Length: 280
Image 1 (cartoon, rainbow, N blue to C red):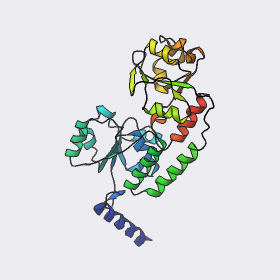
Image 2: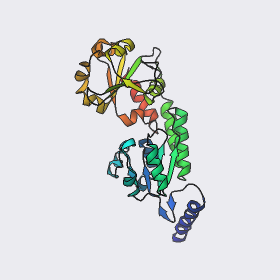
Image 3: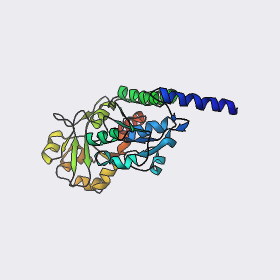
């Protein structure tokens, strides 16, 4: 039994030395820093959570990630803090919003820096899980996540009459933005069989009473933390224009965990089901 285990360690070490992806380096666990919450969730799902030595603040699932040192939040991340963790590889996605300067500094440090492509679609999530699984030599574990995701998405029942949903990004009443087309929220709404109440612009733009009345959403969607920041539903209804929308009149306000709602990772199916249930 001892000889068998020794042989496996040597074999894996050879792969990492001459290949492009594996879980260990020279017989030691690979030290991973993740600058993206979805990647952190995938790495954990692959069974490699104990190899994460640093994660960004969006890495909130599983809850055990809270014990891992934090490197900051996208554009506020400093190269020095990451390098101090002595990682073997630093991973992020094209959606991570890391500054080009930071990426350049990390590359110049001699550390391995890997970007993964992340698209806000079912196919994009599956491709991401498989790509990360292949990189870390954990394809079987990745396929288990893919099967679970597909099973969850197969349970979604779309409504016969789509509703107009409006996502509001809130950090207190002084910072309110609405989500346009092409965003993770826009894609999530479509997966539930509903539609974005606002059209004609991409990304985010400031919320105004005039735009609210024009959009007239049936349901308002916020992060749980965002709704708390405006003192709950009662506080939100005091924002000019909110009470005059269909959503305001019917008090149809939905709150969800931010990472679950926008992460587009292994829990995508569960996120879609939760949102669909809450907006009924």
